[in-house]
Length: 111
Image (cartoon, rainbow, N blue to C red; front, side, top):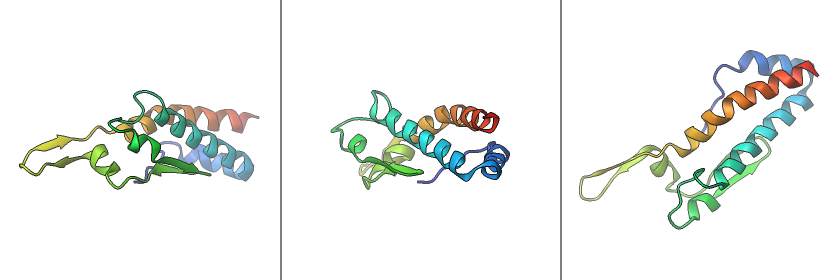
């Protein structure tokens, strides 16, 4: 899964022009925040806790490594023809982080 921060392009570009190191620090901090939120109650759906434990982050990337993560996120069909709706746990986490990321960019630009 890949996501993009919508509405932050101009801010990110301004910070990159000022300092690549500052931009990378903001990006890494926000990825860490997404990871941390995923490990808290309500951050990732828990049945056997395998999905939560499969969340990883490295530098400016994060994601779930369990093969069934997209099926839980987006929903899936069942063998008997039913449908299990998606839980959109990663989308919810990213949407929660967006205003924080935007504010972090603004704060770092002002420094």
